Each structure stands twice: as C-alpha cells, then as structure tokens.
Image (cartoon, rainbow, N blue to C red; front, side):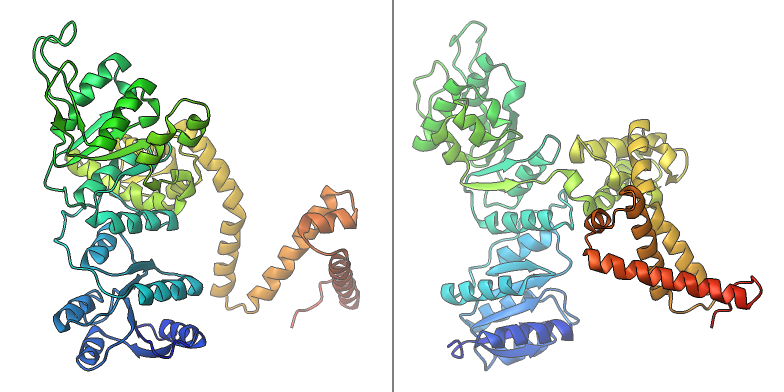
Length: 482
C-alpha cells in the first residue's frame, strides 16, 4: 500500500539502520539506507524519496546539512532528524532549518512510523529561518527536558501565547527567556514581572502605565510594562495570583489588542507576545472561581510543563557541574568538582526548591568547600542526612560491585550463577523471616508463585544436604569444589 513512497534512512549505526528498515518494510514502505551525508546528498541528485530519516551526528558532516541539499535541488521531501545527544540549541536549530520532526534516541518504533506517516501526508521542508542567539541556559538529558527542548524548537518560528507550569524554582523564567531568544521577537525587549510580588492596587499601573494625576502620588506620566515590551515579549510570572478585576482587563487587552493607561484617554496598541507562568493548578482555580476560565484558555494556547528536579535525577550531576563552573567564573574562584559519592547524595535528595535550590547550593559550595573536590561532609546537614540514607539503600550494590571486581581479579569464573543463587537465597530467607515461615505470604512478598518458592527451597535443602555429606566424607572438612 505504501510502496509508492521510498523512505531513506541515514545513520552510521548498522543496527539502527537494520531495525528501522525492517520496521518500515513491514508497513509496506520501500527503504534505502545510507551511512553518510555525502552518500545521501549524491543520491538526491537523481533520486526523490518520500521522506528522509537522518541521524544528526554522522561521520562526515552534520546530518541536518541534508536539508541544505534538498533546498538547493528544490526537492519536495520532509526530513525527520534523530539524535542520541540532544540539547536545546540543537533542537532549535533543527526546527529552524525546517525539519518536520526531531526525535531523541532511544525512540519507540511506533512513534517513528507515526511521524513518517504524518510527514508524508504534510509534505515539504519549511523555509529556513534566521538563526536566533544561542542559549545554553537550559540543560537536561532526561526525557522530560528533551520534550521541553522539542517544544521550544517547534515554537521558534512563532509568537503564540505560552503558559509555563511547574513548581517554584523549576526554571519557568529561564524557559520564558529562551522562548523569547529563539523567537522572531528576539531583537526586541524581554520584560518580566512577578504579579505576586506587586500589591494589587499598584499592579494595574505597573502593567499599563498611568497618566500624571491619575491617582494620589501619580506626579508624572509613567509607561507600563506592555509599552516597555513593545515588539518583544512580556513575561507574567505567577499569573495565578492576579486579582480577578485585573484578569478582566488583561483579557480585554489580549482579545482586542489595545488598552489605555490608568487615567489616560489615548488608545495604545499592545504589541507584545505574552508568556505566562504559574506554580498553581489554574484549572482548579477556575473551578473555584479564583481565575477566569476565558482568560485561562486565552493564555493556555501552548502549555510547557516543567518537571520538578526530583523527577529528573539524571540531570542533577550535569546541572551541578555547569553551575559550579558558572559560579567559579563569576566569582573568580577555582572550579570545584563533585565526588561520585557526593553526586549520589544529591541524586537522592528531594529538592523542594528545585533547580534554584541546586544553583544556590553550588554558590555555597564554591565559596565554602575547602578543597578542589566536594565531599559529602561539605553538604548542608539536612541534605547530608537524607543523602546518607539513600547511600545506605544502595550499599548492597556497592558491596556486590567490590565482590565482583575481587573475584574477577582472582581469575574466578561463573560469577553470574553464583551471585544469582546467593541473591535468591538471601531474599527467600528474609521473606520467610518476615512472614514467620508462611510460604504463601513470603511468595507474595517476593512476587513468586508458591510452587516456585517451594522448588527453590527444595533445591536449597538439597544443596545443604550435599554439603553436609561432603563434609562427613572429608572428616568434617568442607567438600572440595571443582
């Protein structure tokens, strides 16, 4: 059915080419594989694929340069980019070049098929945009952050309204700044205001400005944040704390595109992209009458949900290293490094203050840690206590690691079978102790069937009896092992 479409796969990894080719062929597509940018570019001189699926990091060139070849040859062909080494700049660059989709590895094959089907239905490569300023403020290798990068990349040619949600300290303003930097408005001002930090009676004037004499204390005209952000981006943080009366006025500005200063008669044009953020559940506030439903839908055109730091532990070491280097440079101090055991404690901590708390900790450590390496004892007491418990939970795996290294260094073999047998024995003994010898309950705790547990116990008894017989035959000495 899909034989009319030929899909070209470009990747230097033979296993990935094989898997993608098989999966696409099962769906009825013709597939042609390439290992380099040069080979696929040469093939484009005479061939015309339905879509190209390309890795970004290839041996001879950036895989995205395929887009340049397609534009030069005026070939109507969507490009889907893949990479195992994703970051924000790369994601934004991919979308600005005009790729149809950007897939971080590892990916789900069904997802790849779905993206290719949509690409074939949509068609072409979009026009290339001018590059925006580089922004390395956002870091992360976790799947949640990869999705944030992809969303920012998709939005890089748009100035649509965005609502950023996430816990306090998770980096909402950083995301807002990056959205601005990678937008058509990047050369205009970025103006941020925390609506929760300004008294409600002053917030209207702060946003829209006021005329001289508009109220007591208004001794001169003042322009508001909407005017300051003209042509650029206005970021309204903690929008959930905005008073209802001001929500009504903000909605009118967003809907009609113009407003008056407080006490003014001149109609002003609102020319600012509005990005908002909150740590609150706005849907719940709408249900409770604390937030206008129509304003919520006006602001929540695109939602970017930032994960708390405790849910992206894979990013903690990466962020900490970046922050330590950044702070050392700012303060003119020697850059410090984290010990592996310190990283484990940081990864086990709950981080109620999220990324902001980690940054503040790195500032503290950069100044206060005595050596060039940061040890667990350099961490705050409350963090150390929680981290040490996490270390205790992982101690058995460290013990196993030391045992394996010692055995391998001694030339021992069959480690897997021996370790597995001992692990089963210890788990079963502990479960039986916990249940007072009740096998059914012990099996449930272990996630085993009762019959499976019984067979393993019989095996243990048999092995113990064999050891006892061996000792008798050797006058009480342990039986010799193979």
